[in-house]
Image 1: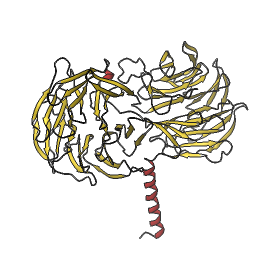
Image 2: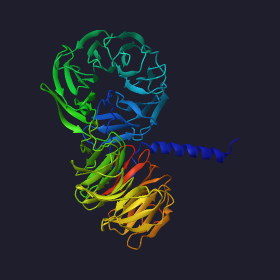
Image 3: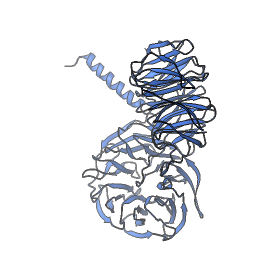
Image 4: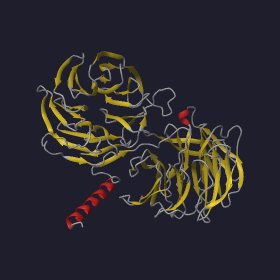
Length: 628
């Protein structure tokens, strides 16, 4: 029998766990703003875009996260981090109070949108496979979910309990898309890789009939706002209109010259239901008259593979949107002459792997897919386009970006393509091939110091000035802003100091773990190093690199991944794979000044200062600005 103390301890543990889970979704204390990632796209796969029914907001999936962002203010955003697996679909309830999201393990989560704590209402595993799409009914009480279950591929559940409503059969392969009639009598239509659309009546929902108009994958089905018609589009280039209540085929929309010339991935009705917007692999947006079937306009959004239109949406506020394969979110103006993009929103589609700030305060970040972005206002990203052949994301590097560093003018970035590229916040101007993969970069004014898997080098936009092979494995690099020297950390825990001619001028006692992060203070007096053994050391650079702090700053519970000095050179920020950011002061080294818990889900990767504001980036694809 448990004692009163044991019962109290268990309750305390449960309360602590609830608080930790709650902190997953609340903005941490000190968070000023956040730059969020864009939708995750995949060639050949349609992406459902869902807008808020009353507000100018859009929700979409990025990896394991659900991102909600305002269509009018990029700084107004939110990232839901409750899923353990990649999210496949998400949607607002028609009443605007709840959001449903489903992941690749078949888990459906319904969580509050209007509550600032975004509390979880219900979590249920709908089926054993991935959830590909979902949609609410018009009363915000039921949710239709489709995907790739072993035997069950469609299911309609109650929003608050997850209990099923009827037996939904009829498909033999993965179900890609679902549409729910918002008016009574309720109807559900699904589209699948078995080339069929299946029409269900209910609730409880049961198979009514199958539609076999398509000769290839059915990529998207969509009901008109008034429920009068329902449309389907597929990889056979067809756009089919059905009667909304009984599911009878009304007409097929086609135009041999200006209509779709490839797979059609997505469709969306105008708020008044009179027009249908479609987009597909031919990079073309088509606007159709639903009643007559006439093609009103056809617009090519580009010529590259990256310009494929993977998703379209028509927000209740009247704003039409389209999503390109490159990740560009296009704000559209639909007129008689066609669709024109009035604004293009760009954001990372992969986790951020490196980040820095330039002298003018511009944030520059590189990602796992080779893309590089810049932000001057700390709210919106702008992609710095590269010339990587056949890149569907218009990457600047042919592989992961490992390091970004600001120079006297512009910046330099290194990637897994064995190249260092030079440019400014708008475009790249030069690239230099180096020996080995660049691991880390340091700034020596207009020249960059580079640590690679094969050695160390000094280079600028014209080429490599000097190179020296090493017997050790470099892991980190940082340059003294006041002198022509830089530090290189190694996997064996050692730190070596080089001058511009690559002469080794000093060597420090090794750390217990591999050196993972280095940062030289702005005044040049101090060098900070973080290692894989969770320790942060501070060396006095003008006093023979005497150790000023050691065996004290070991509060992280995992590998230290980044350190950064504030402009005063008196305080240091550090982050780690433990998702925490610590802010330390040399005036009181015994204890941290600030602690930001759950700053980045799955760990932080980079830190920098934008004036007095701390900027952090992590594996969640976000860049956060903190008030320190």
